[in-house]
Length: 108
Picture 1 (tube, rainbow, N blue to C red):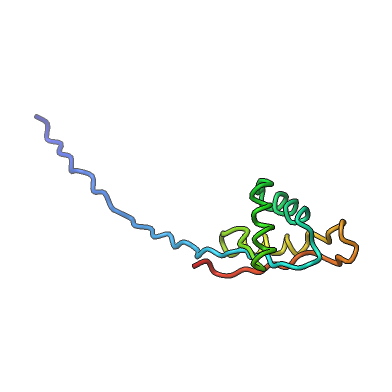
Picture 2: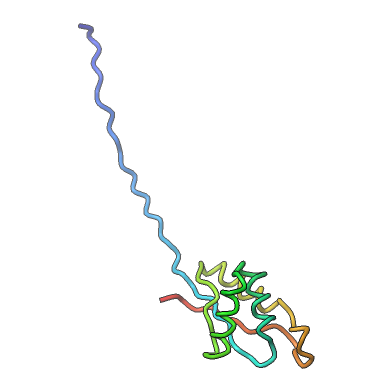
């Protein structure tokens, strides 16, 4: 037997707690100056929602006045809200002067 002894490795547990950011909802608000087709197209372009889901959301915003279009981090929610605001007017409705309105709020 040799005179070399080994000591077992000590494993130090570094507990890194990752604090998750609270989720936020992006809320699309209803108005009379945008068609279902516009809403469906916008949701497909900005959120990659399939047409059927876009139709369901367009119906909900029309019926209730608002719909949650996504839930995400605050930074991404702000970006998506801004993209909705920048999407532009509905070309099929002559009186339409601009984009739809969206807000963000904490998801519960």
